[in-house]
Amino acid sequence: MHKIIDFHSHLGDIFMYRKNVIYDPCTKLPAGSYDPFDQHALDRFEGPFLDPNKPEEVKNVIDMTALVSWTCTLERLTRHLDASNITNVCMYPVAPNIFFEDYLAASKIETRIIPFTCIDPRLSPEQVGEQVLRDYHRGAKGLKIHPILQKLSLSDARVIAALEAWEQTGLCVVSHTGINSYYPPALSVDNEVPENGDVKYFIELAKKFPKIPMVAAHAGGLTGGEEDILSEGMKGYDNLWVDTTFRSVDGMKKLVKVFGEDRVLFGVDRPFSRTDTSVEICFEAFGQWTALSEKIMYTNAAKIMQMI
Image 1: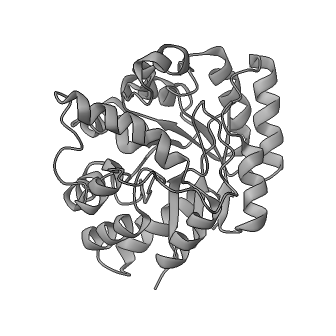
Image 2 (image 1 turned 60 degrees about the vertical axis):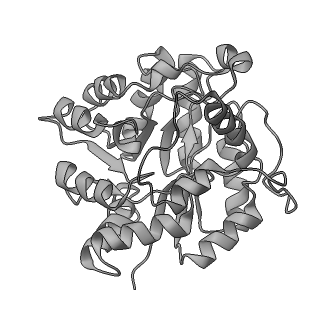
Image 3 (image 1 turned 90 degrees about the vertical axis):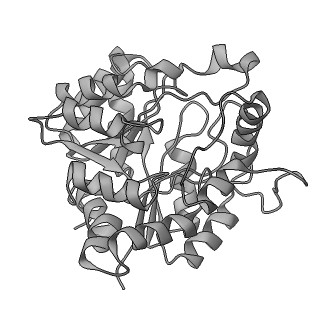
């Protein structure tokens, strides 16, 4: 057996509702709820996640996006880590909704948590550089950007200032990629900018900072073909990694074929996926407890975080 790092997950409410649920052991989905995230994982990420031409399906996904985050508790995390033999889990905050400090505190209780930092969009460009370095010195092992939920263009002066400061750490920057909407229409305008997730903006940013290990969360996006756009756009550059979130067996194999076995990182994206199913799919793709599964599920992540 080898160690396993889930390189991409969340804890608690990462959205504008800001419910304090991390330490609530009693939070559950409403009776009779249909969880499309859970079902898509049980379907092993095969087939479409939803039919965009069915408004009721779209509404349910948006509603459940909030509801599943409110069940994303520390107690539930610990049970799932235990059940799947997870060694460590990287936790990505999304300020101003949830912060590095939230995950740093949780890591004192659940020591398998590796907290990342993120840009606080309320700060000025001059302040964010100081903020991310302060978090680095307190134990942050990476910097996460969610351009949609944080309403941060990847060309924003705060993003550039944060990366200029972060570059000196030698650690990675992770950015969400893919155009998604997380809120109902009444809340969307003030709380998200879906087009910020277009993979082309990640490519532009990664090229500006060739010395920083850049991780494209979701490998460019999940609507189809983004990994090819990402690969083509980053030709000639050596600072690109991707994660396996929401990928089927064939999807994971394609990531290794396109990006190379040293550049793929196992990720779950809790609470929008299942840890157990994600582990099973990765083992089916790369063999159980093989040299290749160890690279994808542990070694690549450990190296990019300077743990080995």
